[in-house]
Length: 312
Ligand SMILES: [Zn+2]
Image (cartoon, rainbow, N blue to C red):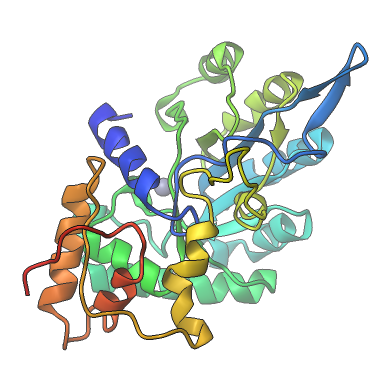
């Protein structure tokens, strides 16, 4: 994991609503659900999200689904559209067994060689297939290699997709044996809200599940976190990224609210500023064009922007 890139991602998470960009889950587990009683005392069970990319695979994915069912764990699969079309029954099974199915583009093309238009077309094509197969709306996207440009991120926001990255990466795609990944799992200390990245296109991930389950974590899907009502903190504040900002943010335009002023205000904290400046600048330059058509107004409603107007 590139530490600089990961630092930028976490900075972005601190200024983005979690429903638009998720790198870690909530800081606190769901009261009531994630508690186990040990020696007569209630102990919070950390919640983690297991995420599997690059499937479905005709052999590895069903094996993984068997093990998840045996251990009563839920996961989120980011599938490649082309492979979902080849193995639709595996995708149907994921949904039927309570797992979440997200979008990992149609062909998993190299991010640096894929323009915004092609990227968004691949997302749209995969999304319609997944919605046909699962019968539910598909709103989760993980870009290949976790790489996004401001234009791609804005395009996903405009389509009301949640971009999901990760906080823990064992790099199982580089591993050569089961021993390597089980050694990693033995040492792993899961923290509340961890999003673990593994790959069901490779054979190793399945051998970590029993060990992870034995640590007492509760494995939840990404939508379970996103759909959870934000819990107020003791001082009345909300967690960074909690969905409270959504109510006054991007969604406000859907409910007949006053149109937002046509100004962009930039964040005054965090190293994610450069990205947002560029995003805002692009929106500003194409205000009357097609990208993103109403991006300026949409961005202007976000409470994260303040103090400074973008030059027109
Ligand atoms: Zn991938």
